[in-house]
Image 1 (tube, one colour):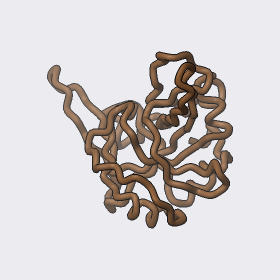
Image 2 (tube, rainbow, N blue to C red):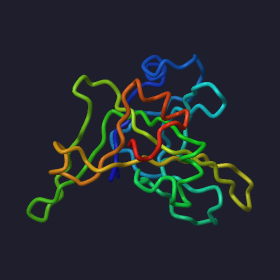
Image 3 (cartoon, helix red, strand yellow):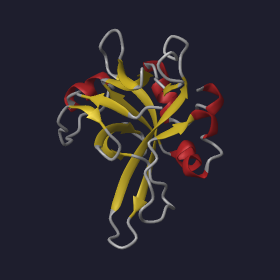
Length: 185
């Protein structure tokens, strides 16, 4: 499970790294302890062209009632069958750029944090799902996302049994285009 991550990239540098068209976007301050409900950058392709956007971490399905608890992670094994995720899995995927993510291991009744990042210090690009939820009384739209997780890689499972789906550059277009079946995650 990915319960916290770090996002310290400048949006201009992210746009270059992710090969995005030039656009103006609000600059979020570096956050080394991103928690659910915090605003974060994602990349989507909903308008046909990749774009960097700011959304809230914690997916709220479009059909959810007011007060629904945001869903932080989605297990890759159930994306196409869980009502909370199947719509987003089929039509609203995103890339979630991060500096790295945290997992905790309990040692002698104390939780020890571990930080995972790329060896080359490039941004980690995680698979995500997007939703738009309309507040029933105010009518305001809230764009939200969650991070897709898989069983931890063998060299990481000593810390935690789950980890985010980390996408390599050659997998970005396939994920955003909705062409990655859950069995391949």
